[in-house]
Length: 405
Image (cartoon, rainbow, N blue to C red; front, side):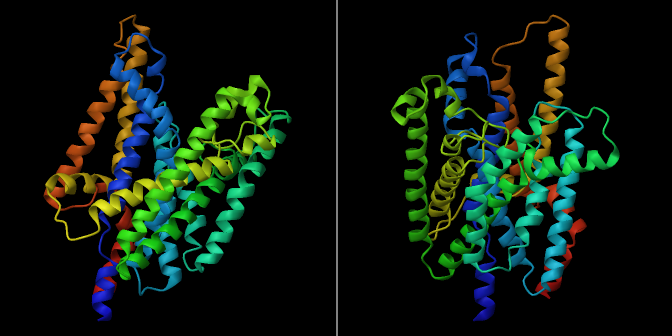
């Protein structure tokens, strides 16, 4: 019976892979469709998609990816169950370092995308250390990071803004700056992303327990309904503050700042900024809104594809396989986007006219390529090439084989 329970515990959760696919496609939309709404020459469909991206996808896709990173940590550690804890953690750390180095290599392409992988890797190392803690302790750590992380981050950035900039830093100074950027002052600071991953660890434990207790349908229903209510409530409040700041005691001129996107932290140290769900600010309100959006997406997809006795066709399997290859898909997206951006710059410099709808076509072509990759992986029953290589380098593949013998 214990073998049967272990086998059930290690079954793949289809909804998680589908949610990861949706998060990656959302990030692609955020990267490729931004700015179309303000272009009067773009097609109506392009401008509408850009507006939808701004309301629904902005920051939510990337943070959902971070939450799912925490879920993946739990599933990965469960697949290596039976190995010593230090060996599992070492494997995860090696995996995280390789991901961070790959991200650094992608950054050298100098494309228009702020590559998330270096921050993601550091956050993995931090969050993975909590895998052996009780859930209440993880929740307490995540709560502290939620409540105080953005305030500390904003204050550090404000202090740095008053200091003179050293244009010829030494090696030690450069290393210190890089570490500071990864942890605090970068676009995706690890202090924030680790909190998202810790939340993902709790969600994974909840889902695995529900599957074991045969309550997955009820739990997933609660996840998406509560998530949707909180997401819509905070989204509406943010829009009201933007257009009616006086109702909340804010000066009229601060309406647009209320929802102004940040680069990993609130734009100022004022208390009211911590209460606004601005995209990519890491404020408590932003984190609550985006985690709620992630819970909605995960809950809906699990309820649709992991409860009952449904059989999924090849189309669903192709999408699932694409979602199960996030490193491959994301890296290909960054490379393709950098190449297209360089080509657009060359065309603009040469005076050749560019279609205002080029970003839309770029997005659609990349989406088709993502689906094609998923279809190939599904037909071959293979993992993504970077995922397979990562498993070999980190040693997790060898640990899994040893555990199944």
